Length: 465
Image (tube, rainbow, N blue to C red; front, side, top):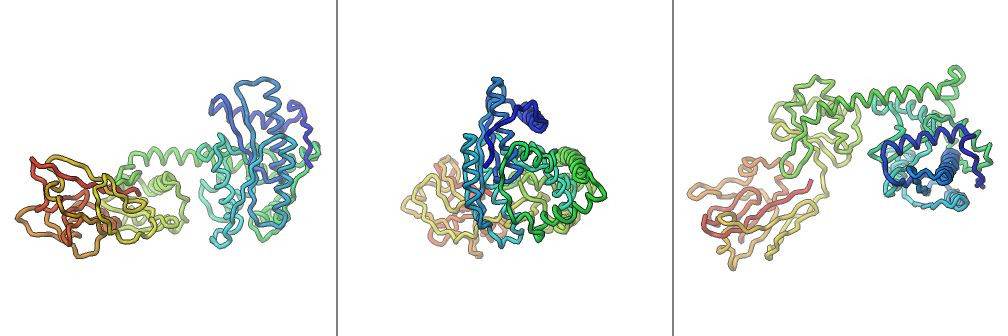
């Protein structure tokens, strides 16, 4: 079991480096106190980091460093993939009890049939569990060797600059921090042995069928025979690429921010394609990557991105675009504006009777709001003893918005009022018996319209993409 004996920080170079790291992190986000959650697997890396952080916590308390009030807790994620997983929980509980550190154990289900592979799927489940914590920072024990492996794996996948930048020392958006990223695994093992720490050995880490293990046990040791500092060099290269990625992101924001517009019917952060076309193709592609990232989407592969750029920049003006960029997420175009459209669950046809509510919820994304207004909407006197029924579009509806003019097809009306094609089937329609009398956000049938001196009921459709 891990020792609870903690060395004086000023005599341990690694702790000094970690101390300096936390000082930089905390100074970047000044506040009275910090809650740091450690992702604690019980393996070598997180065991060393836990030992160091407990030491720092005690040091700061002893020195009465009021600017760094640290609350430390740990989380162990049980993936259920190894027969020894339950014993690992016991080990982590015992170590944290020795240090008087609160430990939260999260049990996750890893879907082995996602197509991403077991490694990636387990990682996504683990990060999702960690992100549920309200902690100020989520502390991960990735080290220099992990960084080198990540860079090599990204090279083998043909990743761009962002992927080759590998792991960030600090990810503000995700609240992730990695204090050990410039420290080698060998240095961590020497530290653990010097302080009589005990840790879990996951036997699956020896299975070279997994890409990372193959890189760790086969490829990098071979490179190390010719390039003894290969891990340090690759880690440094990743840092250079991270700086290059920061510059590309800054350029993309300068180019992309003026292109962002609000689309119709509640869509935000849409892309003005006339402005995108003014850029050269490389800068345009960089701006589109940034735009997708603004929508918290993973970057599509090179083939999909090339198809997307071709359609956005070179398709004819009236051509529709429908390109899948993630599961149930498409990029679409309407009136020279690009939209990120998240396809909701297929909804059942609407058929509801209005009973005087001020708001009528139709689906998880759609509702109707009923408001009283002078001279607008349906004349309230015509609603007496009349039932309004809300129905979905069926396809043969006609509508007469003007007195003395012929009725028009619903398709023509929706096109005229700039309802995007993918929303037209969702438009809730208001009927009296079998007559379409109101199209929310569009207008009212001429025979039902409130006159200028009459009170009317205006019906507004709210769609939440």
